[in-house]
Length: 392
Ligand code: PLP
Image (cartoon, rainbow, N blue to C red):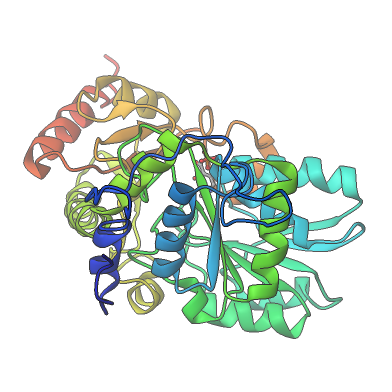
């Protein structure tokens, strides 16, 4: 028994894999852990054969994420980095890549290493400035990698305009949608060819698995990506897929509630005398505010800030926080704090961090589902504890 088709992505995500067990009528899809699937005939291929190639559970999760992204299909990988690496198979040797200069530190580390291996010409530029992006694409390119909002400075790139420039230059456009997830932004509808997500973050939302997903608009790209996923084998395991499918059912609610709480806290932080700057696209003063309001359906759970006292105050602040665990992730139901320069973005050189605007004193907060008043009380107390004492 299958569900009737539903028009709302939220309904489809909640119902993904429900009522799909013909054997026993289980309401929730069984966890697929078998590494091999029996054949009736050695010469006749079946839907499932060997788990590196496909499993029912991984297929359900890939279809559910691809559906949210508006893609022709998707591939679920063992991590967000594996998803980005998979997409890089679309670039030939000696190819040309233009990447956002403030993309996640691990993305830049991977691109530098793969680029050296495969003779790519890499350019890291400010993709939020369309004139800069157009100039970088003047000699043509094979792939443009955008990340919007960017992690950790929450800069906003005009997806539609940037993808139009990429297409004119002959490049495939890839958007890292990790910070918002397809619940809040659908880059393929704005002209992107491919999206990548760290499923570890908003999509799963419970910080209990690591995974990734690549979704493609074009079925030819999807075929190449699926071929490489099977050939290289960086695919997700059965338990992780089960957890992510469970997390996905509440994605729409989590994304909305976490965005509301982050907006509320961003306003309060921006008004605090100890805070020098807040990066949150939901604030009117943010340079990408109107663009974000146009291409996103909410502003997301992530915000960054700098304190008046610089790096020393930032360290005292995160040490004093009790409800924001100091840890390297984002998008979970629990709030986290992070100093990107020494944690998530430590893989970047000091020069690359400076270009990307990641100062030693930048603090990144991922806002979870705790009561917002409790979160504010914790932030206000930690700001007080981090205030430098006047000499004398
Ligand atoms: N993309 C972005 C924007 C990220 O923030 C991260 C991880 O923090 C990744 C990709 C990599 O994801 P994973 O840690 O699942 O490999």
